[in-house]
Image (cartoon, rainbow, N blue to C red; front, side, top):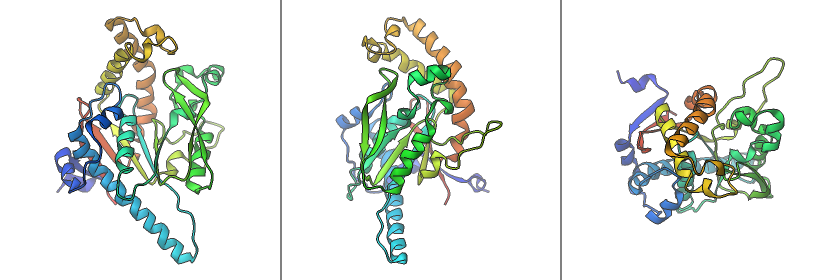
Length: 316
């Protein structure tokens, strides 16, 4: 019997998935893709055509079905209500390429014939400011569930999902200064689709002794969730390679929080990056991020070269 019979997912090789593109036209150019790529990532035009176009075709079908459900519900109740955004969560480890995945999906979705308004929210903006983390003794736990202002994130998503008729303010984070930006905000007004990207978006808070769990989780707002997956050794390698490359780019700026690392040798940079990975990112991956993988509706499995080699789609 087919092994997929015993799995909640349908599994596709990249070749099988590419066939699901059908005649969906390519709408971004190589130069545009260059702007969407992250540091140390090499997403090719062919991968966009074979992986991301079928993916956004599926998401567009889901979004359209959601809008149709809204219309028939209005018809049932004989009233007209404002439609709410279709919300997509993208989770995965540090260095797996979540941000690039979100940017490519946004670029493709926004160019479908119905021209939806697509916004990206990164949960890094909801980290507590460094001053608060220092006060709480959490700087070494930055990125762990307790370092995020979860009530503020839930309140933001609640406003968007309620379809309020005003701009929703979203805090912004700078990896350059390694802190939340107090003077800059993102303003979102009634989008058709919202992509929420972050390592913590599928996590379910753990109940600590003497406390109660919140009644609402971040993932409760999602219509679709995507987990970007890769082997632990590849994640470590990608994190280390990115750290080394940043020495000549972001770290070289005197205003960078990590400017002190700009002049490190390859050996020193690799040693420090490995130490950070082992003490913080690996622990967070094993304790909080990886356990949420099966909560994804779609799992994008990456190969060592960063390309997506397998797609798992939850059965409906």
